Structure formats: structure tokens, C-alpha cells
Image (cartoon, rainbow, N blue to C red; front, top):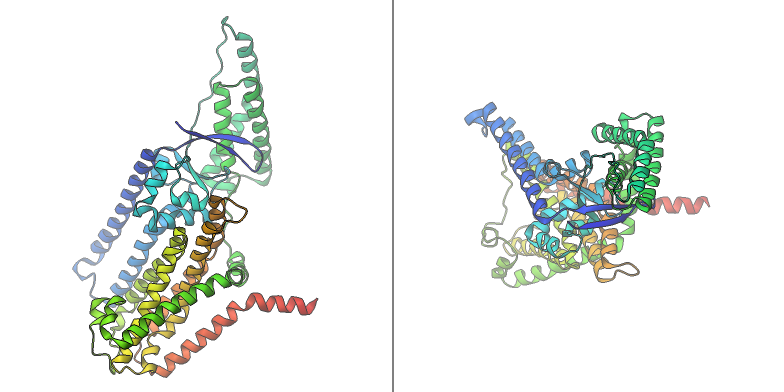
Length: 497
């Protein structure tokens, strides 16, 4: 067994046993089976309710749309949900006695859970994850490196009273036994409070009980230090190390969301982050634009080059002139959910692929820009009028492309932390950048949800192109105003001073 010593922010040295690669894989298999069972349950439930008429009515189009969202939520949200609800454990991890903790021994936060999961789904599962675990001395996969987390075995040691005898060392044993008897009541009390917190969180304890809990943690930490000094190598030291570790993991609870915290994020935190990342976001826009210009020029010169940037069925199309939108209204919900899920996936990759020193993010931005540039040139070559074409792109595209630029900026920041870590080690710089960039994810998701709703419900409407273009202009103006909030506040504060 490989162990690691962690110095907590409270200056407590705790020792953990690192989870082996094999056990982690087994835990992941259990979690995967549970996810597959969830998918099967959803499909079976829908089939039992609707039978062969499942896909025939407008109501069912909503059902399909909701099903797509739920499938995506299970795929990307399963581990995040359980890691937060069960303090670093999923059902698979709990079955094998594993727990995810931060590198300083604290419990993981939503940011750590999200970074780990997104890296797992987009990078680690491609193969590098297992390779990194095999060769990293702390058995970290890429997601653990980016989130600054560890996966450890949670040991629950049963405390036993030392047996007195006439053998050499009996004086020490007697002293250890007396020490145990004097403090066992305190340790039992801490054990009970840890169990309460693990079941119901901080709500299970009153303010007075929480204060007592903190006092017991400090006392037990002192006891651990004393035992390591005076009774080293015994079961008592192992027991107190285990108890202190489990208690410490309950200290840093995840704050509950409230309407005030959501409003603070949307109107203060997210705009401030956009201002801080403005140069990276601008760089992402430039890279996207360069990809679009290159493909546009190439396709305008030769239609055949469209196959380099677009799927074959689109690149070979020739009936672009005066085409009309003929999408069935019943399919709008399905379109909206599918588009949103696809765009969120692209944005996640634009962020996580920054782990490749920014090369992956660069490719995502260039290729998506090339797709738009190639499509624009192709429809122009076949006589499509500009207002009609852009009325099918801009109403949702303003929000959609903004989200991708923000994600790309976060990915470029991630890549820069590896290339130019500054005064930090590369691992430390990566974790700092990933943690900070992950705070952009809720805002990006909101932009993409709005864009998906517009693309699914508004863009296909058979209305005049001018109405759609005015809507796009209004969206752009509102977005500019929203992005300007930090500068407006700064100006107001400066004027007030």
C-alpha cells in the first residue's frame, strides 16, 4: 500500500492510503453499470407508458427532448452529483471504500467535482487517464491533476484496548491504555458527530453542536500529535489518524445555493470573470475568425474544398438558392435540446482540451470557425441571399458563439498555465487555472441553453428574415451591455470617488 502525508490548512499532518489503479477501475465499472441501469429504466418507463405510440404526438416530442437532457445529465452529472452529495464518493467508490479529497485534505467543492468529471469525459477516457495513474506517484489521472484532488482509501479502524502483560514494554502499554481510557469518550463523541454530518450534513447539528464539533476536532488533532510522539507505530495512532481524516473531511461543507447567490453570480461574479479573461476570449475570437476567413477564401475559389471543412451531405448540396425553412413545429423541442447538448459538449472540449498546452483548444476554435466560413462561402457561391442566410445563423449564433469564445478563452488560459507557469510549479499553476476557469461554466451553460432554445423554437419560424435579424441585433446589444457591467461599475465607483 502506498501512502501520502497531507498537511491540512489547520497544520494537521494526516496520512492517507492511496487508492490503487485496479480498485479505482472497478469502482468506475460499478458506477458505469448504475448509469446504464438508469438509461434502461428511463427507456423502459417511457415504453410502458406510451408503448408503440411513443414517437407519434407533440407531447412525445417534448418527452424525447426531456429524455435527451436527462441522458446528458446522467452522463456528465452522475459523478458530480454523488461526489458532492456523498462528500467525495459515488456508489462505486463507497462500495470499495474510496473517497475523493482535495490535495490539502479538505472536502471537494463543486468546482473540483466539475473539473474532474469534465476532464474524465473528454480527456481521461480517451486513454491518458489510466496511463497517468500508472506513472504518477500519487496515482492521479489528468482530472485529478487539474482539480488538485486525490483518491484515497477510507480506513475505518476499530479501536482496541491495549492488553497488559509482563512482556517488555508493559509500562508503555499501561500508559497508552490509561491515555485511551481518559479520552475515549471524546473520540466516541466525535465519531457520532461525524456519522451525523455524513448522513444529514451540517443541518443535522445545531450551532452549539457545530462549535463542539470543531472543538473535538482540535482536541483529537492534539491527541494524534501526542500519540505519534509517545506511542508511535501502534493501533491508537492509526485510529486517531483515520478519525481525524474523516472529521476533517466534514469541516468544509458546500454552501447551499440561494436566489441571492445565483443573482450575485449572474450580475457580479460572471461578468467580472469575463472582464478578467477578456484577452483570452479575444484571442479565442481571433483564432475562430482566422479559421473562418481561411475556409471562406478557399471555398469561394473552389467549391470542392468545402469537403475539407463540412460534412459530405452539406458540401455536395447545390439547392441553396431561395430555400425555405420547413421544419415541423412538433420537432422544435427535440431540435432545441439536441442543439444545446451538442454545443455544451463543444464548449466543454474547448475548455478541457487546453490541457494539451492549448493545442486542442486551438484546433476546436479553428475547425468550428472553418465550418462557419466554409458554409458561408458555399451558400454565397450558390446564390443564397445574405439576409436570408444570416437570419438562420445570427439569432442564436450571437449567444452560441459568445459561449464558445468564452470556453475557448478558458482553454487557452489552461494551456498558458502549462507553458508559462510563472512562480508556480506546472501542476500547481494548472490546478489554479482550472479551478478559476471552471467558475465560468455555469454562465457558459446558461448562454448555450438560451441559444439552444432560440435555435430550436425561434430560428425555424416561417417569418420575415428582417424580424430575425432585428432580434439578433437586440441580442447583441443586450450581450454587450451585460459584458460591460464590470466596467460600468468601475466607472461609477471612480466618479463617486
